[in-house]
Length: 216
Image (cartoon, rainbow, N blue to C red; front, side, top):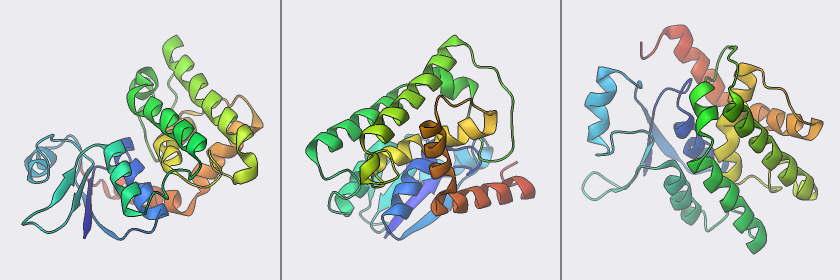
């Protein structure tokens, strides 16, 4: 049995990524949600990982579980669970998808800092030059992938893969802060991510969190 420990759905961009991979590839799992930046979080997260961060994936029973505590590592583990289907089957596409996913995993610090993910509401924060450069680079990646692989399907590499999950929180950032899109292709991909049924389920839960003041 898989268990995914996550933070608030309104706030936790790293939790969203493996959650979407689990949903898109039909892997049943139990969800454990902890309120970020609260005494309860700090008390309870250590039950699952010494890293003291969410998300965490736990596979197996309490006696001998496998524990993975990084979003991209979780996605790679889930890829093995689905016999490699979470990455493109073509070698070149798979390498490209891994490269852009690794770039998201390790980069875009200014965009993350000035435009933290919020699944609900609207905000207005002006990005500094380095943040604008990050946003432009994301849109460049989306433009190149959607142009190059458009005939394969509606996602970055045609069929849904880990790369789409890695960039999903940025689609929410762009929505929340009212980003200006560089092209209709980029804007269409952002809508594709937001309108995805699994993303809509996440957003509904996030709205319920906010309305109920969960985690406050």
